[in-house]
Image (cartoon, rainbow, N blue to C red):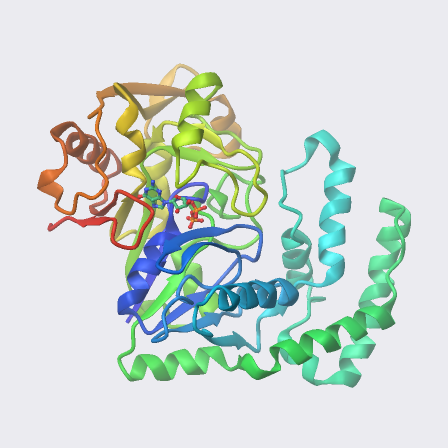
Length: 426
Ligand code: GDP
């Protein structure tokens, strides 16, 4: 059976930790979308790792880690990360890369930088990993699949054709140096050497695994609100962040996805531009940022400070609904132990009306948070393993949010480690 682990909000909810934890029981972990533009932070017996493209199952020797066809695969970044993990004592992970995955080309990264430069203050806050230019090219049908590396003559011809197009934009829009197709071809030949041992027919492999009763985890990147269709367009990412897309980006039948674990953080954080209704500022935000996550809320890819806010029931109810949530994993609850009182955003006021339904972007820009204040629990809850042992106010916080979002919180995470988890019997 297939289980998806996805985010309810803007990303950074703690999906990496939940995936690493659930991978103990799984056979295969698949990344199905996105690229090296976001990171998962994982703390386990080998140390602390920031993974960008490796699936979060690489720390076990019983699992196979897969790059699905939906991923934006940056080959040098992938192997740099692979080598780093191995050099820190992790046994060489079993890897398979879809022959249908497309590659981030060196010029995608350049185009990302040039476009952000051109937009200046109106930029989207891209991580400049080439993701938007990559997916634009994929859907414009001028992207490069891994499989194309193995047909050298056609590849060479296509590289020339694509460079011709790219060079028009480089010359006339960005006024930047032109691409040399020979150099790009040579680089692709280097990529080929790196990936060759790992390339395979992923959807067939997964199909066979399902026939054998294997357990497959789909690991999402970012969260519902960054989805290009259902998120805060245009301040979104360029590939679908939803569990439903997992079926496409991994190549498994949609009906095999039996469990959708939506990860939701006990407060909010976001990176990049875009409306963020429950955002807080100043000292209040600085303190939460400093205490947040595991060592502060700073981007795993860019190191930039994340924007902070109180828990947003409107955004999370929507984020969970659009994922098709069966279970909510409620994370980083331990961090809130310092607060006397904890505000929670329970509604949006838009043009004088209060709603609990998440609106489209133009209305979202106008929304003001309706806050309710809950009492804090003022103690450290790390190390607790039974739900009943959590302080009463802490349980009330969890249950208040569960009621507002309307999806069952079946796991509560109270620390960054694999074992910092409380299962709730429901
Ligand atoms: P992801 O992209 O969704 O995997 O999230 P990130 O890795 O960017 O951010 C989550 C951060 O919170 C990481 O630093 C994790 O180690 C940390 N983390 C995850 N769960 C918990 C938790 O329950 N408590 C604490 N304190 N930190 C956590």
